[in-house]
Image (cartoon, helix red, strand yellow):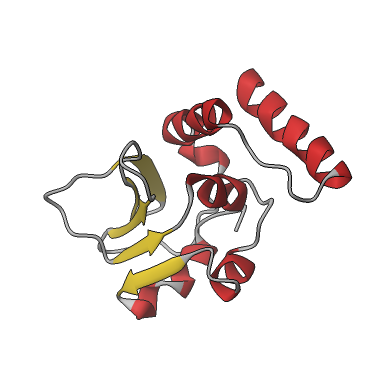
Length: 136
């Protein structure tokens, strides 16, 4: 948690001074690992789902595997995508967009609006993503 918090607060300071500040690849790796280990930090429990919802985040570049966020009941799991299991929605975005959005540094609607987050799949559940996660 300490490295995660230092990385995000460092970005907060740099972004205030330089709006084009970005997260380093090493920082992004730490952030993604933290999401996987501590999804409860980001989950805002909403109505309990009767069937799981799978959101996939596909990142451009050969070195970036997709990540899934699965909401089941009133809990969420975040981790590497399960290739054999189809997602309800796939969001294409940079890893940085995903990290900043999940940490509340970039709004979900703003990321959709400026095309930093491109959804495909079941459009009925795209906006439902916001009800589950604090940062967005």
